[in-house]
Image (cartoon, rainbow, N blue to C red; front, side):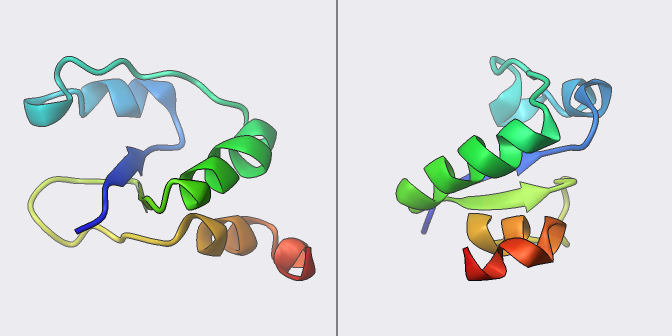
Amino acid sequence: DRLVLPCWSEQAEAEQHLVGPFEESMAAAISLDSFIARTLPALEEQHRLIAPAFCWGGGAVELEPLELRFRLHPELAGA
């Protein structure tokens, strides 16, 4: 099993999900550019997955960080 980082597009939405195992976590706003350029490559190096718009109860999508990067910016696929 690999660790999964949940993420949301808005800080307020992330704060609403700080329950259960996340209740001692802190939601932080990250610019999209920084998320793509720094966060996703760092998660890839750590062999973690990412769950955009994570929700409890199944149905969560887990992606490789670079897959999400390419979905957000297809032109980066060759980079």
